[in-house]
Length: 157
Image (cartoon, rainbow, N blue to C red; front, side):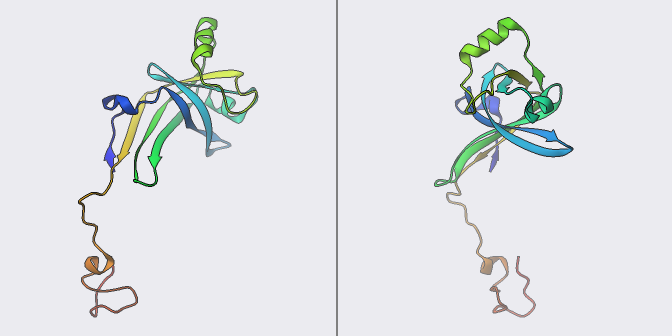
């Protein structure tokens, strides 16, 4: 795994898709998938009236996670953005966003438009383990094998 600066990797910077909003619900962490649009430096998503996400994400610090991982090649990337969310109320901006936003997957999840200015951004790139030797259990323990077949006093790592 290596560090990923989203701004340094424009090909991996999704403009729209699905991601996860991380928020606090009844003093516990919660996550909910959403469709989103990256609008400049803000992640914009919609949610329905009365939802826990709508209530928890207005004027609160929330996280937003998006990733793309290939389980076959064990490669991909993951990015986490954090910021203070707010509800978009400006009619002109709402009209502009309505044309560009992906349709929500769930019916009636378009009542509130929430924007998350990305104040912190971190990420990781998953890279294949090519030409990298990964020590076996025997190599890590100095010859010991699980079940005690190694030299006396060997510690398994």
